[in-house]
Image 1 (cartoon, rainbow, N blue to C red):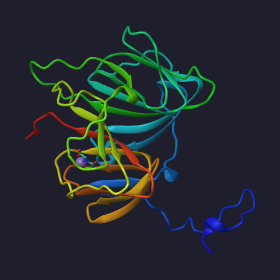
Image 2 (cartoon, rainbow, N blue to C red):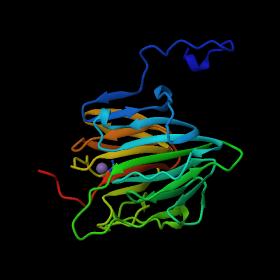
Image 3 (cartoon, protein in one colour):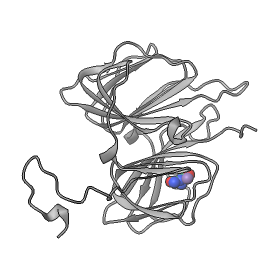
Image 4 (spheres, rainbow, N blue to C red):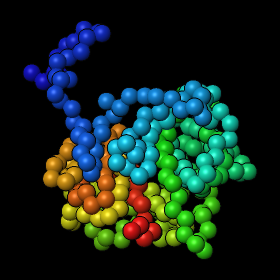
Length: 266
Ligand code: UGY
Ligand code: MN
């Protein structure tokens, strides 16, 4: 009998936890289901838990994490980090963000914000339920004669769905302006209808942070396939071979970080 089919008394756990971790951590990628990601707190936030998904200690050159902000919680005061950009994507609940001198905006699920390097922001939960916000911090790679980007606060419903591949069932939402050299990373919603899949295994210099939003599938990392579903996270370092093969009856979607628009450092 599968442990999930057993009747277990309250306060007890079914057998099967030992040795059944879907997660793996390899030198150039990591597959991280949420179950084993423990929480911490951040000094700049109150009534807020943080769960780090990617960090330099893993090999990533950025940090990605989920904030759970209790009602009345959030940044203690305007927070600004010299040379570091922030990106926020609301997963559930709602959070109020103010960037620089801009008016406060409500981030509801699918709402997002880009905060340029060094620009102060406040992120607070004025609602009555906890807010879950996927967050990313990346050191800005400045380029002579290219200005840093302006702040963005928007919602995925305001971003067009495109498909440059010509393949049935694929679609993309580029949450940050695509091809704009001021930005040194992309945050892209990747949509897959049942039946579609990557035409080839990708192997590229860019790094990824992938947060699964909905649906399910099989993900190739290096030479191993992993079954993936909502709330799983993947870090892919540069040149990690990767392919996605959706499964199930519904669309699959993930939010994908990708560093772009910069030369390699020699
Ligand atoms: O654009 C990309 O690099 C994307 N196709 N990779 C991915 O989804 N793993
Ligand atoms: Mn890729």
